[in-house]
Length: 307
Length: 307
Image 1 (cartoon, rainbow over the protein chains, first blue to last red):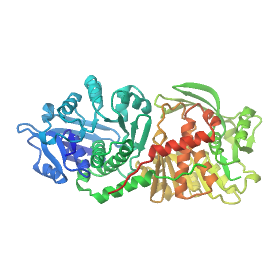
Image 2 (image 1 turned 60 degrees about the vertical axis):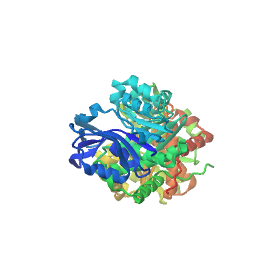
Image 3 (image 1 turned 180 degrees about the vertical axis):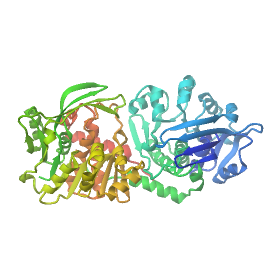
Image 4 (image 1 turned 30 degrees about the vertical axis):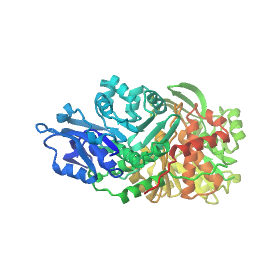
């Protein structure tokens, strides 16, 4: 009972240059949970679903060790639905449809049985909702990490500034870090963001890897060079799930261990993009994960003697 | 007498968001030589200059250990001149002026005293010129590396394909690797390029680091996250100079040592962008270089035990 993940469950329609899926399970919490459950069980999910969310998808997550006790089921509405289409370079996408449905009324409640969880991952939600979750925790978690997006930076900056003072780790992409601070240099942006509250900052750069900042230290993890990025949907959430899963498994919140957690997150994200939605995450096993982490070691490991 | 660098010497006019220089020494060979001379002496320069090339600039390079014996001096023409202006994001620039001047007639001659050099760096020149240099070498160098650019890919592809069969290492940027192969995926592009001849391929991604490919192996070196990139001019050539300087110093052409050489090249490039043109390269010392390489070790080093 060590990791709580709060976020959306959804159905997505996705089109990439390699094909399309009309209806595939998605939402930040699905990706976080699928990734984290490889490292820690149970993953305590807090989310909301409608009457169209299939029992088979619930069973699939539960089989991985995800608890649905904190997932609200709304009988007369549909689940959150998102549809997007990726451009040829896979770095940009157009959102075609966003039907909030049940997510419009999402007011997450932490079940009593989830109290005492040591680690909390707040997916991309209204910052006021993120604050509400933190305030429900009777014991302050050892580490609180959160995601956000440009929409909240422009529409809810005051609430966002409040929640930033309450969390330990912020995960954003490079564009969001620039929008949040007005600084183009990521090093300068990182310094400003850490002054806003988070002791640790992860800046995700997609295919160009991720940076971890803490005080004056910086660590870089590359993305694995892949033959094909099949579908980038959920890669950032999968990264977060791998990161928090490793932290929750090791219960070590040092900077040194966060570096390792970033590598684990990057490895999980590299699986995510190999198939549509969370399809690849549903099938991977421990050996594949270990092999992938070894590829990351080979990718960046070098010997040097300064003479 | 182990490293020959063939390339341009020039004057540049550079404007960046941080200021401008009306006239500063440049050209690929200047950057390669300034970087490589920190690791191996002499650096045997093969280039061409006009009547406007200042003696002080020659003395500055000679003081670093660069030999001008292979530099042709043309009395009735001016040196190659390039002028460019960088956009705010520093990733794109407009070329304002390209006056080839002496470079239009550059027909490099390898002096007898340079024969026997074990390492050869061919800067970005017409591929037929690069072939002419290789053919002049009475003993085949242990390692031949070359740079090229999109201009030759579109205007001299047949000559380019010929020279690619004669070299060991190709250095290009990500865009060039895609143009050369028609593949968007860098992994696929790398495989196609290695089939064209080079056993080793370096794909430079600017602020996003560099990849080294060899057979089925891949290594990634990040760029150092910097507060400011002051002027990116010459960073790629400086990278090449650091890479070849390290190889020439260690005389080790294994994949393992090339990984180290990429880190050394990345460290040198990180100095280059801190001031205009090669200004920063003129002043750095061994201690600063060692400290910078340690920063790269800290940047990517992590511990993991797979349990």
